[in-house]
Each structure stands twice: as C-alpha cells, then as structure tokens.
Image (cartoon, rainbow, N blue to C red; front, side, top):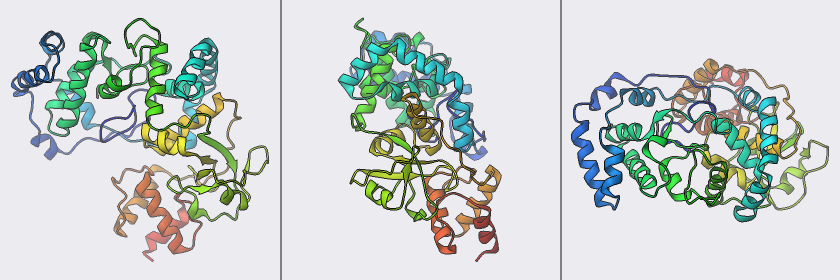
Length: 405
C-alpha cells in the first residue's frame, strides 16, 4: 500500500531497489536513542487522551525500545531501478499467473460477493495480492509497533508516523489484531496487502463474519478490505483500467502521457487499434496513451480507473503499469507485445537527468529513475529538438543535450 513519503514501493516483492545512504548531516541532526523513553511516555499520555484505552496503550507500548535497524532501513530507502519490461517480466511470471488463476477459482464466490458490494473485479485484487506479498506468503517480519514508534520519534517525518502509530493503536483497541500480530516491513505496513495502519483502521472489513478485521490471516477480510479501499479512490465498476493497443508510426507523440487524457475518438482517428486489429472505438470515453518504454515498446490505453486508482496506490508508473497489466492477464488478455525499445541504462538516465537539471528542469532526485518530472522534461526537450516526443529517453536526445544546443 502507499508508503509514507519518500518511497512508494513496498518491502520484499514489489521492487528492485538501488540503495543509498542518508547524508551524515541529516544523521547528526536527528536524535539518537537517548530521549526515546521520555518521548514514548509522552506519546502514551497523548494516546489515552485521544480515547485509546489505557490497557491497549500499555500492552502495545510498554517495553518498546528504539530500533536502529528501522532507522537504517528508512535512511536506505531506494527507488525502482528496473524498466517496465524487466520489472513486469519478473513480476508477472508464469508461476504467479498460475497461482493467481487458481486463487480466482478457489475464492470464486468470495470475489463475486466482493464485486457485487464494492464493484472491484477479482483480477485487480489478485494482481495486487501477488505483487504486494506473493499472496500473503511474504508480509515482512519486523515489529510494526516498534518500527512506527521509532519513526514517530525520529526527526524526518514524525507527524506522519505519529498519526500512523495512533491508528495502529486504534486497530489493536478495536480488537482486530494484537501487537504481536502486527509485523511487516520497516515502515509499519501490515497484512496481505501491506496496508498502513491508517488505511487499515479506515478501510478494513470483516468479510468472513468472525467479528474481527483480520488482514493478516483472513484472505476474505484482506480481499474485501482492498476492494473497499480501491472503491474509496473512485473506482468505476464495469469500466476498464488498462488495455494494450498497437500504435501507428505517425502519432502526435507529445500527446502520449499518463497525464494527458483524450477521448478515444482522438486515438481512433490516428489509427490506434487493439491487439486483435479492431480499431479503438470512436467515442468520448477518456483515455491516456501510456508508453512505458517509449514509442517502440508496449503501448496501453489507460482509463480513469488506472489514473485515479492505480497511480494513487503507487505513483511509480513502472509498478502501477505492471499491476494493471498483470490484472488484465488474469482477466484473459494475452501476453504483451514487447516491441523493440531502445536500451537505456540507469547510468545513462542519471546523466540525462543531470543535463536536464542544468537546463532548468525539476527532475527531482538524480537517481536514474524515469519519474513524472523526468518524463515531462524529456518531452519538452524532444519537442525543442524536433525528436519524437514520447517522453522516453534516447541516445539521440542525450547527444543533443551533451552538445548543449
């Protein structure tokens, strides 16, 4: 689920990361373990004042100590370091396809009830289930309360983690989980869909009728809760999220970006077709053309369900496109056409980002990852140089920038 601030990738299965250490200056500004006990006592008082039972506060927080391992993992947060074809090829494996299909059958009646109540189809849920925790097999093993308390005390983002810690206590106070059951990655995510405590508290559903919202052990609770959360983001029942298409060579490439929605009529007029050769309908349904590897790679029409929900769940275009593609495969779509995109390494992307930054573009961190800022800057410079403006890096663009023209 959506991770607090710096990184949206989950621990474990859903990202290959490039690790980097925090600056020594930042480490020196933040407190060490010495003042943690005093801070924790104050937080306990705040929790009771906010209506959490003294017993829950005591059971959850008594004896909790500062965890330097959590801080180390937080400082070493990474970013997606693989392109879409590499990442999706690894994550949408034959095994994960087979297991996902089997689970759709096993929980068929549950998925039918979930879709009837929340409007979210089974393949969408199963794809996230597989990517987040390998269908509940890999949920992380760090003590969530300890991690959250440590990050709440830390100087980087205390207000955000204190809110998460307070909601973790509310989850316990409500009887959903015990402190011992709350285990996961370093940022306090819990359960088969890696919900943060606030998401857990606000959207967890008791779907198996046992009186608890158990997103650790109960698959029905986990699946329905994910659907409840997805519905809250504006999911449109019965509507597509991502469709693979074939694009002609004469498109106005500068219009191909997840931030630009056009009526399907627009794409139809330019000859965009589905995989089976059928033309895209000439109607007013809004859709963005997504080219995760540029004009020579795979192409997708992305609908509001993708733009409003998938990119909210995780704002990495690589992860979200993989999740959406995986769901389409589970729903019956064929394997994607890989195309023949130009290879471009992370090191070359870093160099490109540096050159774009010198041109005055805000590309964010120079990290070798093609995020929204980098895509926008690439498109602007491609237009300037008269190159196909597909928002994807190329060696020709790199050469032009190196010349400083």
